[in-house]
Image 1 (spheres, chains in turn purple, green):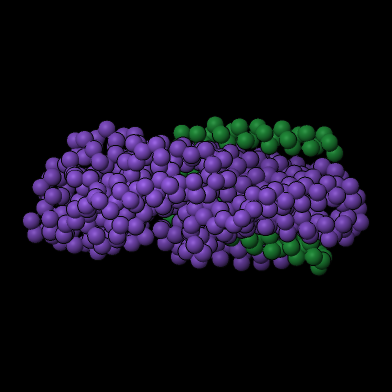
Image 2 (image 1 turned 60 degrees about the vertical axis):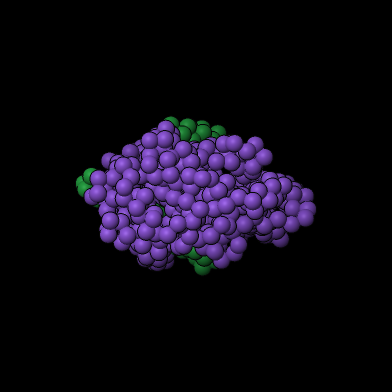
Length: 468
Length: 97
């Protein structure tokens, strides 16, 4: 009888783990995704209830209070957040998960210290890894949040001797850990290891530019899973290990997809600040810019080009999202369709600030997802398009990625808008994109510029098109 | 103890492989919901936190455990709800299309 409860808890964990796997599988297809999310949530509920029944858990009232407070905060955040702020939200939640995992290790360390019982070697190593991964996830995610939210500059921050400093930190972590493996009850050294881990998280994200954020967010997502798995090794709980491993794997897959979409290796994203090596190329392009002219038009002309086209491909970028112009864009598309124009949307894999971000934003504006085309599907179609309308996108439509081997973005797959018969670019000014590279697309004969904020310009286009 | 560790390592590695298999080939449209959904799952740390906060004692490890419970719950509840909010928009669109 005394075995009944622990066995029941373990079996419930098994069910919960299966539900997680099933839920993730269903998240992979648009038709079943919502179901999948609910299934995973049920798995989580089961796991939490089972854990509460554990005989070692006596502190119900406080834990229930903690669960209630956390749920309230989480629910409010989930309903208040704007879809444009999704990357920040995921970053923030990631950081909280990482911090929670790290705290599990710290709490466990304190328990060993309090009771004076010896720390087994494997638990000790797991605790140290948990502190490192959880700590890096925590500070790294919060820094990514600050960059995305614009609290600090999104451009890469570098300083002299950055790499040696990082190596020194890593060395300090390894040395501290080695010391703790031999003398597990040294509180000052443990705290030092915690501090070093937190600083490492900051150092990890600080040199990474805003353009690489989709990669960073994916990677931190993966790390938050691995941190949870590490916490699982600390308290020897299979549920944590399985769920953590699943999330770790999914994050790594998304990281790889994002790297491929930018034609960058993970190594170069993490260890070389974007644009630092490309100063000569940027200088060359700027010199070229002076003797090239830009064709600028007003919304009336733009509306005429759009209204009398047979097919229009809209290329939305993050600039559209920042200006909250997605609803006006849909209005424009609807109006054009009413006039018999064939409208498609071309979505670059790294449009936006996290994987798939642009799809969510357009979904929010009720754009049917049958109109959204991935890069591979739309690129062959640009040649048949009369007008490519680029709204707040820059680097992902820069032909230099195809032609200029000196450009820092050379080799990145782009949307080939310059192959369309005409290209209209809506942009605030001539500033460079996140990669800090000048865009030769703007100087082409077939390209016309509409200078202004995305929302303003698109609204003007809508009213002009209506008057045609 | 080592035996338990080996078993745990087996579980970890095999679960990672399942993760890779299950999540491969996800359409770009679902990248963001997948990420926030899996993010919610990483809030499973709440279980470790509950265990850590479980003792009927008022010492530092229980206190840290309780903080971890709150943080991980924010991660779990916020993650699942925001994912549902996003997927709801996709669904509405499907009916319309």
